[in-house]
Each structure stands twice: as C-alpha cells, then as structure tokens.
Amino acid sequence: MVTAQGFWSLIKRPALLLFAMLVASLALASLAISPAHADETNTDKYDYIFSGNVKYNDEPLEGVQLLVDGNGYSAEVVTDEKGHWEVGVPEKAKYNITLVESTLPKGVIVAPDEEGRITISEKGATVEAEFGLTKDKSVNFFLGEGVRKVTPFIDRLMGSIMNGLNFGLMLALASIGLSLIYGTTGIAIFSHAEMVTLGAVGAFFFSVFLGWPIWIGIPLALILSAAAGYTQDMAIWRPLRKRGLSIVQLMIVSIGFSLALRYLFQFFIGGGTTLLPTNPDTTSKLNILGPIHLSIVDMVSMAISIVVLAAVAFWLLYTRTGKATRAINDNESLSAASGIDVDKVVRLVWVLGSVLAGLSGVLWAYFRPGIKWDMGWQLLLLIFAAVVLGGLGTAFGALVGSIIIGLLVELTPLWLSADIKYVGALVVLIVVLLFRPQGLLGKKERVG
Image (cartoon, rainbow, N blue to C red; front, side, top):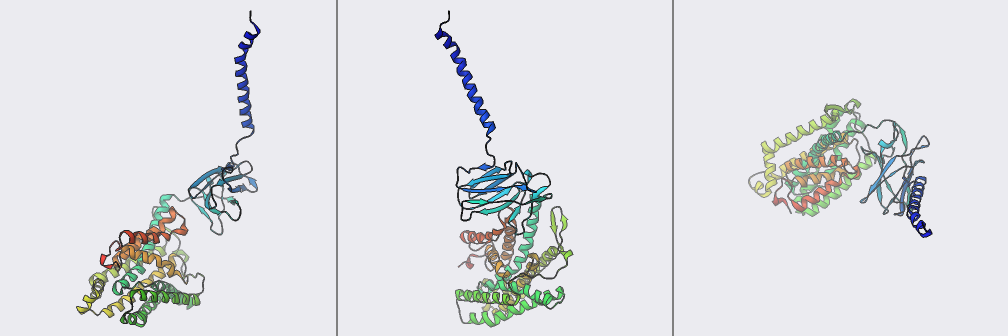
C-alpha cells in the first residue's frame, strides 16, 4: 500500500522537471516576443552616440550594415525595420562611418556628395564624422538609383604607380635645379618654389591673357624663367656671396624673397585657380596596357620630362660646363684654383635650375590641373624631401628621390586619407635625417 509520503516522492521529481521545462519555455517565448535591438550597438556602454536613418524614397530600409571605426575602436550595426541605427563610441573624436553598399537593395547606391565628403571604396561609402557640443551626432546617407562600379584594387594600384611616376618625373625637374644650385652655392633656396609658379604663370600670361598659341606661350614662359634666374643671381645672390654672408643669413633672405614673390603673384592673378588652354580630347584617358590608362597630356608630360632629364644627365656627364659644375660641387676652392670660372658656372646653374623649375610648373599645371598663386609653395616640401632623400647636392640623387616621393604621394591614398598624402614627405625627411643624413646617393662631407 502506497502512503501519502510515498506518493508525494513519486510525483515530486516529474513535477520539478515539468516546472523547469515550463520556466524555460516561458523564457524562450519572452525572447521571441522581445528580440534584441539589432539597430543598437554599445549604446548602453558608452555615452557618445552616433545615429541615423537609412531610407530610400521615404521608405525605411531594414538590414543595411554600417561600420564605425576610429581611434582603435570598431563596431558594426544593422538597421531595424524603421531604418534606424545607433552606435556608442568610447570618446569624443573623429570616426569613419561606412555604409556597406552591398547590403542595399539592388539598384540603390549612396548618392555622391557635392562637397566631396563621401569616399567610395570596395568596402562602401565612408564619411568622417565628429561630435559637436553634444554627445549625440546624427549621420545620414542620401541614396539614389544606380549601379556602383568599384575599380579593382590592382587597377587602382597600377594607375597610382603611373601617376606617381609622372608626378615624380615633373618633381625631378624642380628638384634637380634646386640640388644643382645647392651643390654649387651651398644655399637652400626657398624662393625656388616661386620659380615653379613663375613658369606656370608665364605660360598663362602668354597663352591666355595675350591669347597666343600654347606652343608659343610655353617656350616664352621658359625664357622668362631663365631671365628670372639670371637676374636673381646677378642682382641678389652673387653680391650677397661676395659680402661673405653666412648660409643662415642667405637662407633667411631666400625665405623673405619667396614671400615677396608669392604675394606678388597673388596680386596679379588673384587667389583663385586658373587653367591653361587644352583640348578636351587630349585629357580623356586612353587604355594603354591592361589596367593602365593615360591621357595624351600625361604621355606628353612624361615624354618631355624624360627627354629633358636625359639631356641634363648628358650635359653633366659629357660637356665641359657640366664637368665644371660637378667639380665645383665637389670642391669649389680647388675648382677655382684649377682655372674654372666659378661665377660663370654658378650663373649658368641658376639659369638652368630656373628653367627646369619653370618647366616643372607648366607640367604640374596640367597634371594638377590648374594654376594658383601658391602652387610652388605647396610643392616646396616635396622638392626638399626629394633632394634630402636622394642626397644634398647630387643631381642624380634628386632624380631618385623625386621618383620615390612621387610614388609615395600617389600610393598613399590607396590606404590612407588623401588629405594626408603629402605628410609622407615630412616623414621621409625625418627618417632620412635620423638614419642616413647624407641621403641615398649623397656624400657625408655634405652633412652639416
């Protein structure tokens, strides 16, 4: 016979098991009724919140993925049924917010921004966002119809390499001129940047202001650059050298002269950007080989740079004045004692260096494109970086340094923001001065 206590012991375990199953089923049901908010990431963890709504034709889009990264932090979020999303970030700073376009409906893309704040990549459309006075920042993307054609990375890499070579060659024209002047005088001429601007401004004056053909305007601009170089040395630098001014004093004079010329250019051409005349057919890109696309202007620019650089190399290696220039570069006193007219050679170097800088300015006006009153000043850091990298006072070192700097500038935007592509030149300056002050092809005697 089963007693009451025995009966309770029989049903006790099944009842407990049934109760546990009931509790588990209620918990699962509650989770199904109240799903996790896929549109919120780390909003309960951090105080600074980015948020936004993704809509197309006023209809919310669900399931669109967004990525937030910056300052060592990264997170991702997916829009809810209302198209809403929120992401918490640990600190008040700049962050990159990327909308992954592959998660948008077919035929929908992020519309281009007129101010150029949106960057399109294989990952998606990216905008840089920063908080204002509050801890909340709304970031929205405007959508439109279209099909996004993203250029493969290898194609962009090859295009950047060709642009880097083109830019490096035209940079070498200005860098070699500066390197030759430094090698024969020992002066770091800051006003050399304005010789770059003068070449472009001269071409603009003759071909646009006066309306003459560009094939006449460019040679006249180079003649103007040659006259400017000759006048500079005759009226300023030779008298100052004869008076025995120190290198620091001469450098300060060159900085002041550079400022005067720069604002003189601004006075005459204004603060805007002007263009040299060109045929639209010569600016359209042509398929050269595989992913390599170049315009006629690009090919002509590279051809002119190579021919001129080869001519300068021939002059330095095989002509009497070229050998005299190299001799002065090595030892000015010994060169003068051996019968070389140092002043005459230096004057020739000033003329040649100014012509090379003027030609570089004309080519950069087409590469950029456009002419601006401070365009030479914008290039000056890169010119000095190329000269220091290649080796102070060495023309061939300046060529090597210019090619490296040109490639560095054009390849940087593949991985970093295009706004900081010129910063690499400053990094190169610092690294070279720390580990190899004489540069790649320079001599230790030049250091200090």
